[in-house]
Length: 630
Image (cartoon, rainbow, N blue to C red; front, side, top):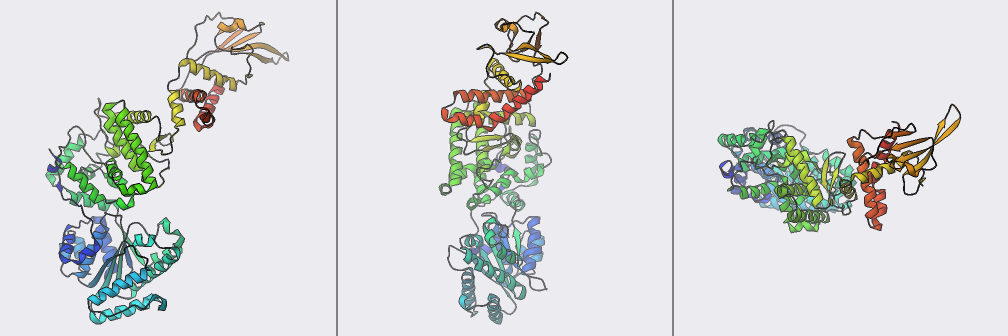
């Protein structure tokens, strides 16, 4: 069975241009193809149409439609503009609620559709110029006075609307503007203050006249940190504008109802297919209908795409269309889920040369390519190579969602499993087993790249691209710790004991771990002299002259053979219980010491200062103190 057998695919490969909806045929096509979620239907009814209508009294405001490139922002504004301009078109809307509400504004406006390009003109001059041009086309004569002769722009708009109503007494005037935020970003501080003041006046004039204003912006204008220097002006603008935001749920609805529409038979087949994998992925059962409606797109694709900082390339509907065209004639795999997730977006980023002008993205690309090349050429577990490459691409995409490419934020093995639907043949179809396998693959990736460019945060279990991790000291310590012999562990165990027992730096006998030791005899107010050995009694003969007692701290990992003669002056201490925390602390301490001994001179001081080498050594000391109390 092919993917094309399960989906009624309708591609979206072009971006809606607002000004093109001036042509009636194209405008009607946009009406017919616009898919409206229940959340968006509510926003259109209660915000957009309510603010546009003028039949009953309301505190009318300007409207900002917020949505990233390719999310349907221009499509929505084109639909609203067509309804406001043309009589009898509301019935073409697929959502009955919006179709009914749309009659309140249907055909009641003359509409001006425009976009703001790369201009150095003021916002006032741009918008007033567009209004003058359109008024001239529809037989209305009016010229806005020059900006340096205007005390209040609202008076000019009232005069303009009076001239408009002389020709169109029963209609309103709707100005629809796209790409407003791009224009504002390019403005200087003093210029943007004047632009925002004019925008506030435009919002205010909507309350007292039949002039209406809709603008499309790519992100939330009022909460945008890039405009904090004009926060006061933005607050005043916000009072006169309503925002309608296109969110992930709206996009998901468009994907499921237009791009990937399915009938009941197709949904049943997909449901049967996905249920075979419900034991591998958490929440698949409880969110099964969501996965069915979006199949073969994973919901995590939309969630992650929304956060990618490559804003100019967030044409999500267009990208999904391209992905689906590649899949349609392929067979749906029976042995794995066969879903597309956000890792598949990485090739689009890699193949876009324009993105390389961004130094952050260029750096992520470079490090990701190094890791992928190493996996292609040096990965020692071929059966896991496809999974390893998917993981690296997913980490690369995620790196562009954190705002700061050096942030220590990533994804856990569980999130990789559930958000990518990673799959490999397992002896047991179990979610925990699959997660453990993914962790094995992650460790193999780290080993393949010599612990460079990828880090693991022990505090939260997250893996992430670490772009500055060229000298992977922590991981080299970990690698060294994993290859230590029992004899080496004994040696560093004794080294730690030397610290906690306050043993002298110099031993009593050269090249032997023997110290003179003194114990108080409180009843007689004297001390007793003896010896402290780190090792077995085989070395007792080297301690001369004889003393009152002999204390032996035995090797815990590689104890030598010796005969316990049960002498009255001998005491043996043996570490009986070695828990995981103690073993890890000791091995990391030993690994740091070993690495320091063999590293280049330029790195030795850094290794000695490294956080892990210090903190784990401290843990080892604590373990030694606990031992002494025995």
